Length: 174
Image (cartoon, rainbow, N blue to C red; front, side, top):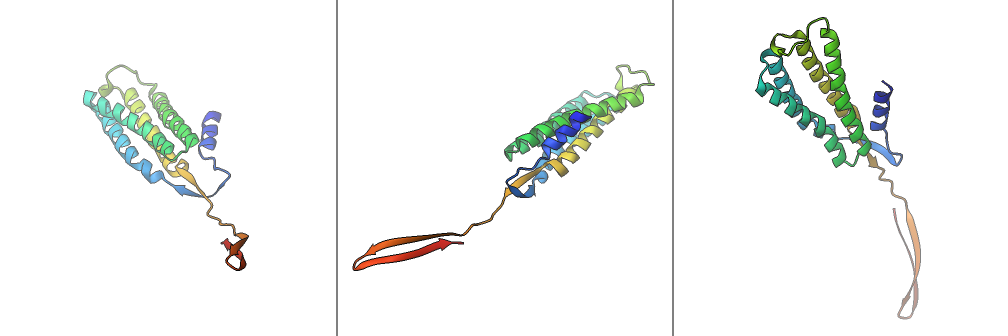
């Protein structure tokens, strides 16, 4: 539990030179919707019929959902958020799988998922963990610092030679 809390703290850390933060979680939504949708459809197919095509969708969706968010964080140069996002997107489904196993441990876990409530619960727990991790990532981690736009006044004085003497120039910017 301490590791999860530490990863969330690192992932949501703000830079000291930022006054504001901008949300870019909407960019994570596309790979999350595709990945989690395929994972959910494949997981239901595996749980109900033990389908090979369902397994392809489940594992393919898992890869898209696991790597989509972290790559978007990297594109925004948010390295800590990327590491935290990947860790959370890996550990939350694993915790869901273990939770599903714990709920189904009274049942016999054999290899046929179509008739085994234990494996069904493990699949559904994995999907639930992945959805929760993506929601946390998109809502709370996908923020980037926006540098302040404060402009400091600067002034200068220049002496410039001209044809019959000199000129004193006072300039600046706000």
